Length: 283
Ligand code: FES
Image 1 (cartoon, rainbow, N blue to C red):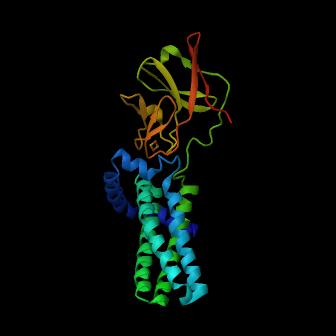
Image 2: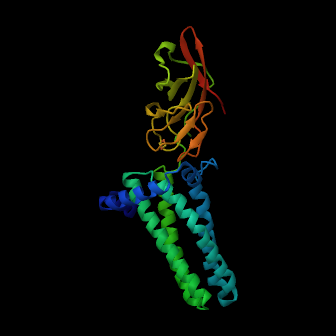
Image 3: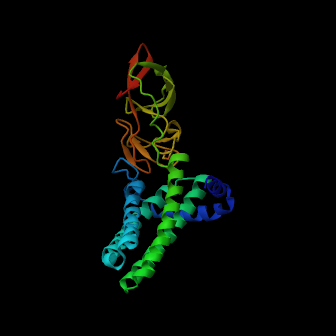
């Protein structure tokens, strides 16, 4: 299986299709409300993996009923296939939104993941129609085939998260330090211009906006983008240069996705003309 995934990662012929589809998704999700809803910004967690449990669970249970109860469980199995279909729509929308912010090998694997899931959903839809017309055996076979594809797609989804790091909080492994650390001279900080520094090995970004100095970790929680190269918005929020996630300087809260996890925030003080910082919360 690993060799198959590697082949997909290297299959650059998919790139043109990826570009076109990702561009289309980006247009549809351009509005802040849409992006935030689909990214899970409101949830504090990526939405797609939460939703994907529903169709997978429903379709597994439908096939289990098909295999163990036959015609007796036909009504319940049909209900489960239908529930999975209903949940597949928002699941796919959230997944497509996440996918549109990936690149290269990750995006190729994501495209195949999506095509497998789309085909699996179509098979379940045909199965539901067959069941509704009383063709239970035919519906069971179609659902079984769809479930096989869904599980293959789930393998690719796991690969995207656990191997390629999609949806992972990229600031999760920073060791927070409660010690005040000298990071820069106060005179190095220019008003309204993000300044990169390093505190105990962790990159941080310092910003003085309206006379107030704020410090966030510089590695974007979404996919690791450099916030110090980002844009300071008029409202005092910092926008990531990679996918446009916007973080409030005062507390790191995400105001615009695709990020769903707040940016780690640091305390700052000035001592003898030097800027000193420490993590705001220490585990
Ligand atoms: S890396 Fe994606 S928004 Fe920052």
